[in-house]
Image (cartoon, rainbow, N blue to C red; front, side):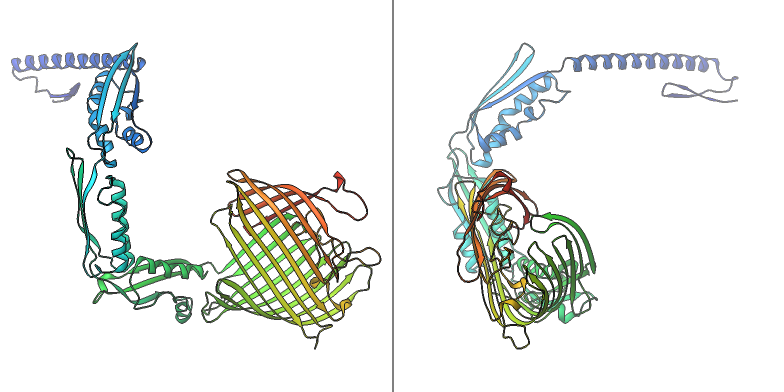
Length: 620
């Protein structure tokens, strides 16, 4: 019978009992020795664990001081210094501190070399005071290495490109300048990127070398760049099956086959296709393996965006108070790229139902046809109107202006003041244009916007003839370090044949959070014999507001507004003034204003006349 026994990690095979007695004795001795070794190992492990607990209980305290440096030099020295990086390591020992201290001088010297300091002198000391280690380094950077020679040149097919030549001439390191390795690396990368942008994707640095002579504090820079061959786009291949190919290609206007192959042109293709709104993915891949005579095909793979989108919202603003909204958008009705959208907005003051149908034409990025149907119901204290508007328009972008030429039919039933209800019909023609400019960011201090609308009705099938123009403008001007001055104005003019047939939706009113604050919405204008506001043929308002940024996303405001709506003469000008606060949210500005009516006909202003104006605006 045989068996296996374990003695620690030693495995012993016992021989049959009839074996040699000497062998059996030897095995017994080996088992005894193994047991003793195992017991000793366990004892040493326990001793080491107790010793570790003792070391951790008395954790080494270390202070690292660097003087003589500041700014980027100090930050880089701190990043290089291994002793500083290990300062809070719980396993740090005194011997390890001494070892790292011996390396510290060379680490600091290396940390200064990228900035051109190759002869730095470091005075190092390490002391133990009351159980605390203090490592001190006094650094004398010395003089910076100066560029004594710059050998920068282009070779290859694009060596004579004017843009590349100008970039080489404007290289930020020149003979006599202090050496800075970071400036050199960034400038080299910029040259390579520029060549790639100009159509040389094979550009490379054949020689890129900096030779430093520390004793003389001089450096020689050699940078030889080879552009390689210039590439062109041979064809743009579209991969999609949900839109007509000819329609999609109408978006590829800025970049066409035969143009230079460059990252800039590829990004332009991607930008135009993403802006179209039909695609959830625009993947562009150049096929260099298929290139012939340095003409490379480009594959564009398109995936469709979700066709329909619904959104619901609840909001509040001072003019129409609490309101509910529902929006629907169809992003792709057919293979020709037609779109549609609809809006329903409900409140106690104004109810709106509107549907739009869009047909892209010509260059679909800038031109389209739009067809609109709108139902609008408005109930004010002194007037009421219900209207149906059918409109067709030609939309286009011209010289950065967003413009529209349109014709429309309007039916409106309205009451103005104490007058009887009137049914009016109008066939109108008109045009409008708007443009805006603003600085980047959520708090632009330089900006302007302008809107103008002109419409006419000749009276052939209309209840009356009219000519109406409406203009709005706003400008932002920087004031002080964190302030801005906002100047705004609004002008409305109309010539009307029979004013009694002229509907409320075309009359002018003043008052409200985007007009003369301190007064309710559409409460300023000509009045009838009962004192009801019935709107006017003309309107003019002006506003001056000062904003001051008091925190990253908060702005304090003070303002004065003035204006009125009128028929023939501006006899009364109403003023409103107040203060407010603005929250600069990621998607726009939330406005909260406290305003008082400064001028009132029948009484003086009291605290109870305070108006709270609340609204939301996207920049301008």
